[in-house]
Image 1 (cartoon, rainbow, N blue to C red):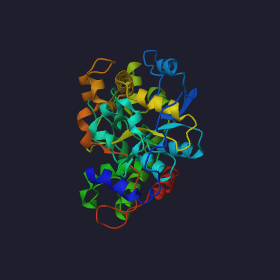
Image 2: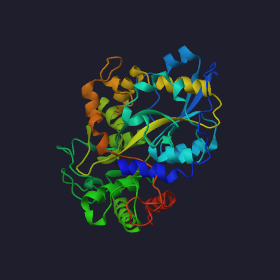
Image 3: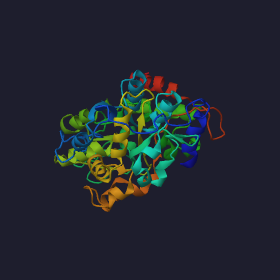
Image 4: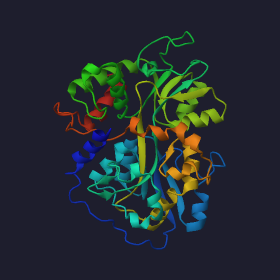
Length: 385
């Protein structure tokens, strides 16, 4: 895991040369009245989905900064929106954050203006998906695994392998999985295929699902082409995926704990697991646009995002692990030590966190396939090529 994380930063070091070495903001002034945020679904709640989950209303009342949220369904969509501009913050995963830094779309963060910085998990403070050359480009928010969500009426016992979504088979209810499973609608899903192959085809020599030479990459694409024959829908909208589990006969898919928790709260027969092959995952960071129009409100929000009660309640709501470990135990929110353990607090070193694939392998086996090919080739896979 260490080599995986470091290589992504090292590969982009040249790309970020010339970026400002210090934050643009040296003091927080009066709020500008609003802050515009690009966020994953479920990350910024004001009680509209479920009234008890609201960490926006109090912030707006205390600061006078109205929170405007644009939901993005994939990291590529987040990068595109930040490239277009008009947003102050983004809750970027590791497969977007380094691209935003290299593309000079985000600015360094003055952590001296974030009083709660010291409360952040030490494993995240200098994480290389938001720290380049010792410069911080974001404030950690949440992290967690990509889980296998399944229908408990079909699977009386948790599936032990991701093969239920990659290989055609008869499921425990006696019916085929064909047309009853889903896959993620984003090129980073190639990493899920590579992770599966790491376990089942060790002769390929894959050591990182984000660093694939031509042979390894071809094997991953071949697996995904086979998966296409099984998939009823490539999902990117969390709420559409939930509807598919409720109404369209989908019984297994890679997913986020967010969907699992919401469906379970509705009494739906779903659960989740991390199978024997392990899981990819995400560690998300609040990042400030280089041309943010509301930097003071943005800094106020970044500090607010580390509040123990927000971190605690968001952890419960999304099924994630808080960036502030104290949120698991201090009783200021809904989360508990047991809940954090369930969400994966102890699995940090087992998760292969999303990162942008780079072309220079650290494996000593030649050039890796760059991300732009992941994008074009995955479009081809979905289109049947």
